[in-house]
Image 1 (tube, rainbow, N blue to C red):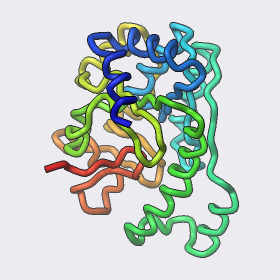
Image 2: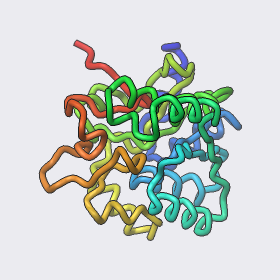
Image 3: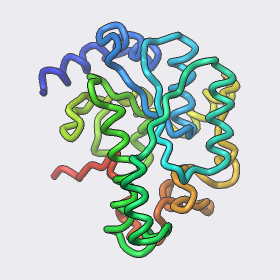
Image 4: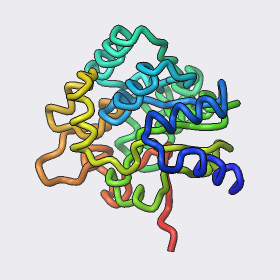
Length: 237
């Protein structure tokens, strides 16, 4: 699918994020989708989509373990823009089986258990959400982790059989924050309490000044890799 990736790279080359999103929505009508977890970056992109009435479906993964503050900003976003945010839930049979067999906090017990929980609550619903689309928009930035520095702003996602496009890939966190201030965009109040990266409540803690950006995610595991599988990449030598 290199030709498909090349087409998207050419289409978006030299464009700012809004221009690029507009071009993609026009070129792939009804086939562009954006995943939001209501963090800083995702709120920026949601603003771009909603304010410009772009033909891009916005969705979120409702894992059932989100922070109350995440639900707050979800609701505030819908109120602010008057737009639809589609919710994708895990299959209840899989959740029931996992919790019945292993209890509600099995993810703390092993990496295998944690990945099982992530798969049931996030990966499987994501695959359903992405099905039938051509372009997946994300809020990934290069500086968020070492692994992500080996990514590009346009990628072919083999697992989901579509293109991933990261419109603010080169932005710094300061630029993200400034954009939010400039347009008075609703954001998760946990960011002001030391949570740069926000996921499920049992798996996320605040980080101290100077700690790695993703140190608060799955902090009980090896710190060398901080991905749940949604955007996992390997270093290419």
